[in-house]
Length: 297
Image (cartoon, rainbow, N blue to C red; front, side, top):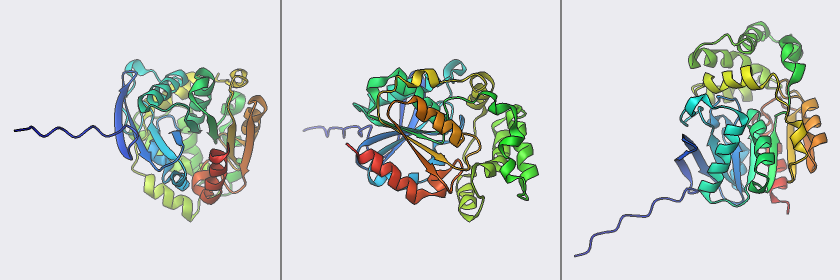
């Protein structure tokens, strides 16, 4: 009598939800689609990877691996509070090796774009192309004047309440994940060119996703004030697509242009009808721009 053999474990690149313990952290990631592998690192820090929503359907031409960064979303916390850009980049490299990917495309949004830059010059042989979506290589004096950054919205009826929430975050005046989730629900209105029906529907879909303050406080207090990745961008050796919304107040078109000046193989695409959420505000254009870049030789 033979004993039935156990079915083989699912491939780490099979569609669906996965977890792997990498660098001492339980990392959650989801896989969807077919085509060239694309590792997608979400923003925040501390935001949930499900903020990507449906990725503007780019999984129709790419195998999208959405990473829940350490300490965020469905991933576990970092040991010893290690939430630096180098830590996130090391997780991306460990995940690449875990998935058996030779040179995937790496895409980072907002803080995830900073991680993607760090990854590209730290592990130059680990990627084939780079997509930097609404991000920056530096902040500098920008963080000193919150009100000037959002002055374009001053005639909106929600302006005063949302400004107070944004000022509270930048001042570090939050003490729990729940505190920050309440602030985010108000301040996120600044992150769209126009907080209309499409933006409101997105907010409704994502309103229950957690916001984790441990990685956010680390970045806001310890990295953002002095962060400057520009000196290392010359070492990024792969074709790079930079996407920025014309009305992005937090990672501005000027910051995108500055990245493009320092990256040897960069092209810049400005989304005229978007703020920080081009994937939501102009999904059709996002789909076409990313598809063209992914499918180029």
